[in-house]
Amino acid sequence: MSWALVGGRGDQPVRPLAGLKNAVADYTWHMAEPATDSRAGDDAPPFDPVAVDRAYLQERARRRARIERSRAKRRAALRFWLVLLGLIAVSVLLTLTIWREVERLFGL
Image (cartoon, rainbow, N blue to C red; front, top):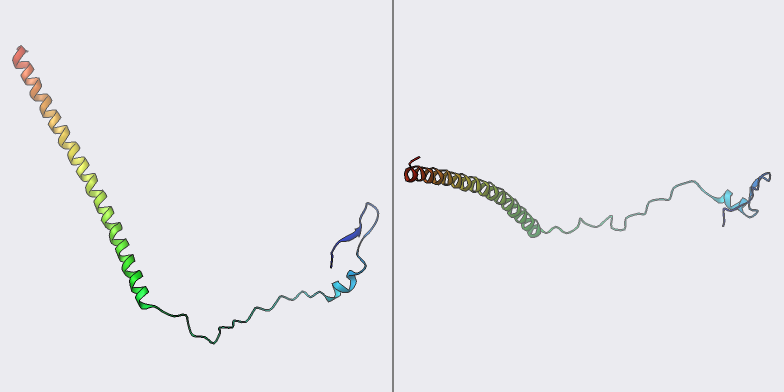
C-alpha cells in the first residue's frame, strides 16, 4: 500500500491513487494494546543477601578510602607549608649570620 499522490503539477489537483480508497477506510486510529506480561504470576526475582552485604561492605570501603585520601591531602599540604616555613627560617638565619660575619671581618 502506497501513500503516493498523483498530480499536483501547478494547476492540476492532487488526488490519492485509485486503490487507496478502501485502504484508507480500513485504517484505524486506535493505539495498539500493550503486551501482557507472561511472568505476571511468577514470584519476584531472586534476592541474594550475600551480594547485598558484599555491596554494602564495598561501598563502606570506598567511602573510607575517599575520607582517608582527603585526610592525607590535608596532611601533605600542612607538611609542605611547615617545611617551606622551616626553609625560609633557616635561610633568614643563615643570611643574618653571614651578614654579621662579613661585617666583623671587613669592619663595616
